[in-house]
Length: 227
Image 1: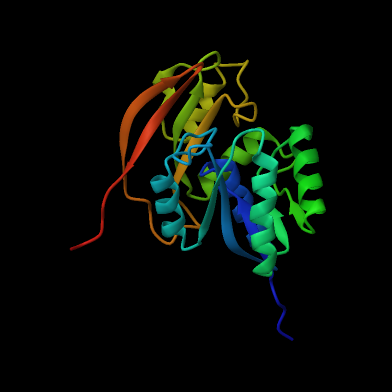
Image 2: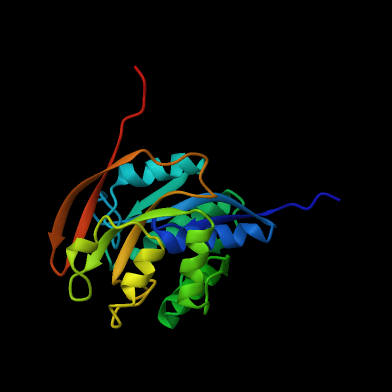
């Protein structure tokens, strides 16, 4: 008998944890990812923590073949906008949310409360897994990513543009105060290829930008539309 898959959305940052959570939720079967949900800064130009532009995130979604829902929000209005997106998903018969948190209990508590209040189930496939196993899995599966944000009190801007590879893991061991997976915001990534992509994202490295105690790397999407 045909088994209907549960429709889900992925809480999408554009980085390694959200894509690995997506992959792990799907590999066990029974899940159909119908949407990516990406929360933007209040002016609607870029994602908050990763500072990826709207165009970059849309190009990523297009390369994956999955529609993306993007919602601008202030920090104060974040939960309200998130729940508004969930109300839209519910009308689309989506019942489940996939999240890439690893072990920050405060994040899990918020995710489970907000999804439950909206009538959704929450799946956290990476929860309590070891940092090295997650990084090794990401690389061995063939995902490709570059570092696009660093917290300057933890890492210098020379890390921007680094590929997420085995050498990166070894070099991170020289920063014992920094979490290997960047779970405390030490760094963020942009994933541009891998098993859940239909094609690589066609991009160029842009300029470095500093904002308060963070430094970001611009990602410029190449225009591949033929006229």
